[in-house]
Length: 311
Image (cartoon, rainbow, N blue to C red; front, side, top):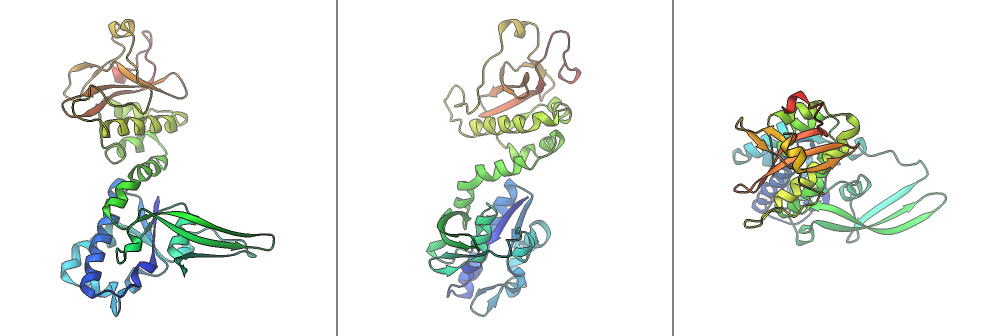
């Protein structure tokens, strides 16, 4: 689950109702963009969103009842999971501990929660101070044994540009929540949008040992990053993982030939390794599309033990 903590201080600006409507439009787009990357996204606020005053005398409940905002509200109500209050998701602090977080001298509950949970905060773009992918928040923590004063950098999103800035981190967070190869397959289009997979990989991932899941997940993320950054005219991507071709001997033995998306047999000589060894991910480059196609995920194939699903 990805928690987005609502920055309640972004609703304190003296803006007009029309400006508030535009800010809400941008806010919904930010939430929608994050949700598209990770569909386990949850918005957390200190109070019910219906009760939030987004401009002087203008509440979110009024905004949602306006016909022009029906689609945006339906996304929030039906798709985006929501929780309130903050205390429902925060760990309980020690009884003898007090803490306070301030942004530009003003107490901030949502930004404090985002820092405590290592999660992004989200704001309505109502002031220039919220136009940043990171916010600096001063905090003080006092208990019976110690006093700590420091500055925290909090992940923050108030525009699609900010979502793009944190996209890789969000995708990594989504991938780390996957607990099986079957889930990895089911979420492949969201987690690895720049990779393609042949049908046989579904069985490979469903049969994947739990011990191999973290390593396979990490290697696929690295391959996805390489495909995303692959520029036209470049012979191959700049690899974030160690990718090497198969030996001629194994190629001649047909140990890296797999059924492609169109049903034809194709050579997937390039491969990277995953743990526990000797795990391998075989792939080939689809140059005209700028994509990397995955042909096999599993144990190193041997002449006397070729997995049935890969033949």
